[in-house]
Image (cartoon, rainbow, N blue to C red):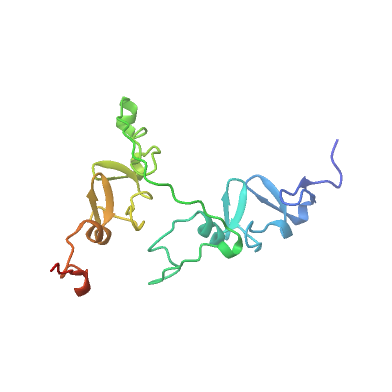
Length: 193
């Protein structure tokens, strides 16, 4: 028997959603007025929507909460945007420290398709489409960053020491020569008398 006058339940407010006011997203129904970003409460549409674990966001808040961080991810040419969304109530998890893994690839399938090679930074599986090699180890493209500053690296911009990767600037600053003439300034030379 048909359900006259009823409709689906709104995922946001749990009220009945009638066909004329319904917006569907990811198999769920919303009132048009409830189809809002979880953080900034702006109205959403198919061009501004981003979904993460059953939650809906505008692309701006999604990027601040889950997008890449660090140098080079500003909002335009030559900018460095430090707005991580704290004023909007976005709480960030601290980045995970380096945890190297030593997992040889025992299976033929893993050796052929790259399924069980583990990323040197995060320890998760690295597949061929996302694999970058550096310091003799596989890395996800997103994990292929300088250990010190977090800058995204390429094979031409990375240097390595003790199995870890660094940008050239951080490598020089931390492991290069020290003293006058090497970026330390005249005040860095101490004369022992």
